[in-house]
Length: 125
Image 1 (spheres, rainbow, N blue to C red):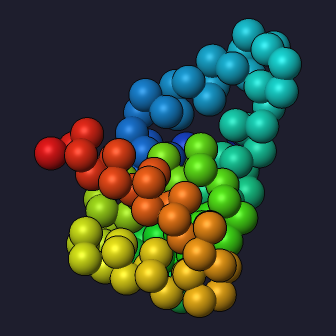
Image 2 (cartoon, rainbow, N blue to C red):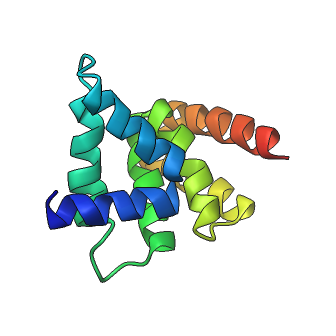
């Protein structure tokens, strides 16, 4: 296993939990359709980007959420809203990210993000 993969799995375990890392490994092992996408996520975003110095996990979460909101990447938001809270982003700050995104990504994208975040926050309560 490469150094970036090892770092990636360490980051995934720390930020998303061992169950997510195990599921990613299992998808690759089962050779299911597109299963290597998880491995690519471990290698690049987590093993390379999330492991870089320069921004802490909290700041990376804020940047990531802004991008995901703009892309309307709702499935990814379902992982990254809780991850942001784990990284120290407060619920009022999540609201501000969504409000701020409305000016740059548009109201429909922000409204979609609001629905995803609201469901996650309610589930966590």
